[in-house]
Every structure is written in structure tokens, then in C-alpha cells.
Image (cartoon, rainbow, N blue to C red; front, top):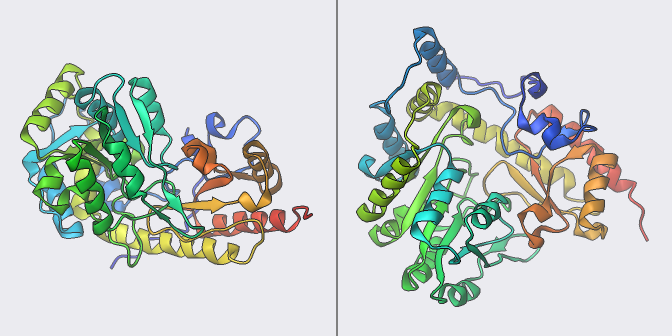
Length: 394
């Protein structure tokens, strides 16, 4: 197996990387540990860099069609990696996962319809639903201090409302790091099917799961589940190519897929980026070894976070089952959301995502992106531990 070096220092400020940009960090954030935006501080896989260089060397960048190898490569990746035998004919391309979520809400529900979310959950879900004038129906996850689980009784009650038409599923879940089991997904799918609720599943973190927690594609559970779902996928997270990759959706239901394709056409979402094409084909064809190495490194970082904070007063840091995001519980500090943000910035030098961005259930929490060089993470954890040790106690 090739050796990939994830410890190579990378200065994200040499390019307008959103994670390290004043737009995110603020004008006073030049020296903060940038751990908010969910991408990785690692060079892309060599196979991707080589493919993009080869495409650059061609020198002509006119309009392109979808490359013939792309959809078969996606299907083969899912079959080999996750045991999901999908039909390449069920794949539609899209600019990004958020685009898929928005189009699904627009064409499969009406203004004022309810769409279920399971907070604390990815904040863009709320923006999409607000901007499309859909009602947000909250089915909060249950937290026992260590792990989150779905509240199926509450889900069944809310799905029974005839104006509730859709559920946004986050699988694996951002930010709490759960990789939902097949049994959990099956139970959710049964409740939704019984009540005519379409499942739209954001599975962008699908490839990033840790030992003992395999990812289950919702649509792989069986024909009935696939036909009542829209799956959103992209190599953006897995291969750290968010700025040069597109997304794709899997829709096995012929009528829904045709409707989605018509909306893509109406919105003229039908142009291809040459470098995205090259990057995606390379990732799904030759990227497995790099991803395996990245997962090993990421799990080492996840273990480091959990171990370093295990006995530190004021914070709880359960290890995530997947994603490169840690969901840190600072509620024991008794700080307001604004004061917690101020404490982390001024005392620890941390710029992380505020927990309340994921819903009121996230107040007192913060989302840490640990997909960085281990030396960076160790230094950041040193600063946090020192700040917490100096935090005044009653």
C-alpha cells in the first residue's frame, strides 16, 4: 500500500479557503485555530491530482458531457465499498448536495408543507426550508450524555400529520457523528412509508466511518425503501475536493427521477465542470487506498481528541462513529452561547462552529473539525485544556 503523508503542513491562507477566511474567522481571527468549516487540511489524493493535471495539459476547456466512466465508477464504488448494487441509470448529476435537497423540497412538496429534520442537525437544512417556504418539523434526537438516538415515537406522531410530506435524513449525522444502523434506518423508513413521507437522505459523509460502524445507504435496505427516497452523494468530503467536485443523486423511482430531471432542465442545471469530472472519475476509480489511509489517520485524530479531553473538567467529548467532526459538550461550564464562543476564541484560540447553529438543542455544544495535521490538533488541544483548567470554579 502506498504511503500517504497527512502530516505535511499546509497553509490554507495561501488561497481563499473559506475555513481560514475573514468571512468565517472575522477580521480578528488571523491567529485562531480554524476548525469550523467541514473540509480537510490534507492534499488531495495523488490519483486525483494526476487526473486534473492531465486534464489541464489537454489545454481545451470547452463544454463537456458527463464522462462515460463516471456513473459506472460511482455504482462500482458503492457496490465494492458498501455492498449497494445500484443501477447507474438511476444516477443524476447535480452541482452539490444542497442543490439536491432544495430541488427535492421544491418539486416533491408544496409551499407550507412540513419537512421533518432531526436536530441538532446541519444548519443548511434550516436555510433551505426557510428559503423554500416549507415548515420545519422538529424531531429532536435523544441524548443520554454519551450517544444520540432517534425518537421514533415522536417521529411517528409528526409523520402522521397529512401536511408532513418529507424528511431530511442526515446519514452519517452531522454534527453528532452517529452512523445510523440498518435497524434504525429501517424503522425510520417504515414510519415514513406508512405516512406518505418521502425520505431525502444527505449521505455526503458516507465514506467517513470508523471501525465497527459501517455506513448503510438508506436506499440499499430494499426496493420499498429505495422507491421512497432520494439519496444525495458526493466525493467532496471523502476526498477533500469540495471546491472542484460536483454531486449526484440516486433515485430509483422512475416518476420521481423523471420529475427531478425535468427540474434540472428547467433550472439549466446541466453543465459539467471539466476538473470536477476528472477529479470524480479518479476518486471513484483509483482513490480507495488513499481514502483507507485517510480514515486511519482521521480515526487516530478522533481518538486523540477523546483521550485528551476524557478527564478535563468542563467538557465531554464522546468519540464519533463517523465524519471528521467532534461534537463537544461544554454545558458544564454554564456559559451562554455567546459567552462560550467568546471563551473558546479568546482563551483557547479556537474558531469552531457554534452549537446553536444546529438548532437550540446544540446550545452549550461546539463542533470541532479534527481533519488537520496531528501537530496542529495537539497544539489546539493543549490550549483548550489550559483554558479549561484556568476556568473559574464556584
